[in-house]
Every structure is written in C-alpha cells, then in structure tokens.
Length: 148
Ligand SMILES: Cc1cc2nc3c(=O)[nH]c(=O)nc-3n(C[C@H](O)[C@H](O)[C@H](O)COP(=O)(O)O)c2cc1C
Image (cartoon, rainbow, N blue to C red; front, side):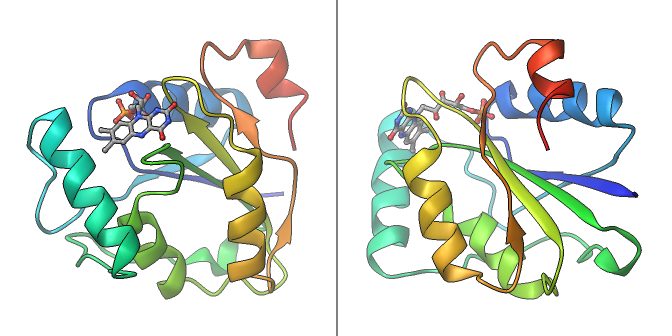
C-alpha cells in the first residue's frame, strides 16, 4: 500500500516526527506551506490561530496540491494549536479527494493529545476511513511501526 505523509510544522518539531514516520513507513513526504508563513512570536501565532479558528479561515497555500490518487494511506501531521488543527491544514484537506482513503492524524504539542481533534476531523471529512491518531511527542520507532 503506497503511503503519503503530509505535515505542517512551524518550528520543526512536527517536521522531525514526519520525517521519522515517513522513513519507517516508507512513505512519500509533503510539507504544507502557507502562502503567508507564520513567522511570528508564540503570542502572535496564538492570536492568529484563535482568529482563524473563530472565522473558520482557510489560509492560502504556497505549494502544489499533492495527487493522492496513487496513495491509499495518508498520515497527516501538525502541531496542536489552541486545541485544534492549524487552519492551513484544513485548507489542504479541503483540496484533497479523501474518499475511501485510509487516513490518520499525528500531532506534536506541549501536552494536548490528538484524540479530541481527531474526532473533529473525522466529522469534518467523513469520506475518509479514519484510523487511531498518534501522539508524536517523543514517539518511539516501535509505536510508529505499530500504528496504522
Ligand atoms: C499558536 C500555538 C498554539 C498552541 N496550542 C497548543 C495547545 O492547545 N496545546 C498544546 O499542548 N500545545 C500547544 N502549542 C504548542 C505546540 O503544539 C508545540 O510546541 C508543537 O510541538 C510545535 O510544533 P512545530 O515545531 O512542528 O511547529 C501551541 C503552539 C502555538 C504556536
């Protein structure tokens, strides 16, 4: 089964997890790049993120939309922002044909686990076949191998 890891990362933590997962799962790797990078302080990013959540924003992307036709497994990674997925991740998910795809989320965070936001994503994109999310904070190779 061909697999694709799609990730967003502001400060590199999720990027490192995404690279580890892609390596172990022999998956291709695509980074989600917003047109306006979140190159700002923690406090400013929190405000921007809260505004985007409240307005259901879909920030523009500066990347090609990956062709997911050739993949049957999608692993989608991002930092937890204000208890949710950063809205730029939703911009990309809106643009993908998720119908029938095996999909799962992995997150990094200060402490928040991905369970609740994975439930939200499942409701937003019911056309995908969602698997258990992975908390990628300090994740081990064995946990990655046993996931999905
Ligand atoms: C805007 C913003 C909101 C955040 N909200 C949360 C949160 O709700 N819960 C949490 O545990 N960590 C939160 N964090 C911490 C990040 O999820 C954490 O540092 C993450 O690993 C960063 O990943 P990155 O290096 O890939 O960007 C937040 C960080 C930022 C910048």
